[in-house]
Amino acid sequence: MSELRAALGAGAVLSGSEIGAKHRSDMSMTGTELPRALIRPRNTEEVAAALRICNAHGASVVPQGGLTGLAGGANARAGDIALSLDLLNGVEELDAEAGTLTVLAGTPLERAQAAAAEAGFLLPLDLGSRGTAQVGGNLSTNAGGNRVIRYGMARAQVLGLEAVLADGTILTNLNKMLKNNAGFDLKQLFIGSEGTLGIITRIVFRLRPLPQSTNSAFCALPSFAAVLDLLRRAERDLGGAAAFEAMWPDFYRFVSAHPMTKSQPLSPDHPFYVLIEQQGLDAAGDAARFEAFLGEALEAETLVDAVIAQNEKEAQSFWRVREGYALDTLKDIVNFDVSLPIGRIGAFAETCRARLEAKWPGGHFFFYGHIGDSNLHITTCVEYRPSEGMHDVDELIYATVRDFNGSVSAEHGIGTLKKDYLGYSRSPEEIEIMRRIKGALDPKGILNPGKVI
Image 1: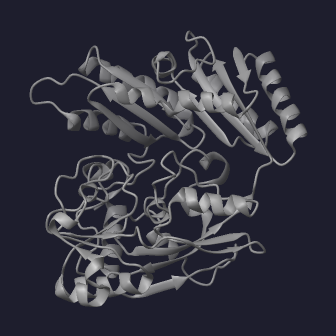
Image 2: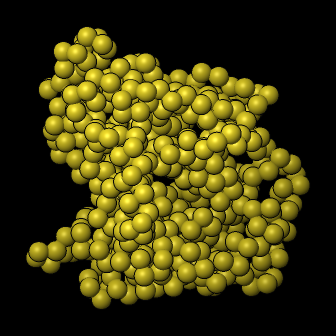
């Protein structure tokens, strides 16, 4: 600790009761121990100095951002040193000509979005935890969120970045160009690797034009096949949706009837529901095109009912249903965030529900998700028998994901909670290559040990 304090200053290295309880765990609440120490570097050079010292002594380092993850990826053990990016915070440059935003990794996503919007641009990456989640953490887990169907995952929003390797080497490539094929695209090593290969310190985001109009509709559909038909119609007639959120009827009934939601856009007796949002640059033309799109879907019986938001307040009431915060009022819930081939999501949900109900009769099982980007959310609420627990639910659901050739992680990464199931979605050869890359960049294994692989 003395070397770290000498390099960073006593105020940047905390221990014991100086470390806040929040540094025990991410939002999974599975971390139970305070780290051995907490480092709070103020710039890239201090991150590098800290890692050089820790690497020389073989001290394990766990990067921590906004701690909004749900896979245990930022949880530190009692012997680990946590490295918080809270002070590495700020917007460094907005280049209007290049359409880029350069920010420090500890910047909350919402602050980066606001900086882009003030200059007339959109930073498409968007999550419900935008006020707390930090952009470095968003990249380390390759976050997705609500707009993936239109703009892609976090890695699709990044042109350049800076990262610090385990030995303190600073790797800087703050590229602003869309086309740059000069050798390997090294930034992709760090995006999605959950801090196991290096610590991201700066990011160059690609910006898009700020939408001038948003049109939202809450729709009822007769089948999952109709959900897929509506998605394809949106791609063809609207040039793609900005958001496409599907809900199975049990989810809609519970959430829309709950007092905390205060919104029930449609009757609760339909087989499926979709919240669809369109954004564009021509307010009048976009609204007319959106209404015509819905009208044609109704005539084709793809839709059986639909209501268009007349203002921002009504659109937000639609989103309150989809956000499903009422589910948090249930006891012993477990949330899953998985991916499936789009055409198989309906069959997967039927199979998964049947298996869950057979094992836990009387349990509550809710299915909902982005769908257009392959992402399905599952919330379970069951009463376990003796010797059963959360891992029994994990095993059942992830085994079903494996049966359908899906991914056990659509968001939040692998962390510790999904590590046992990585082989359900990745081949032994792929995992071996991951190990080789880890060994090459972090030979002493100090960065986020015990995570992912």
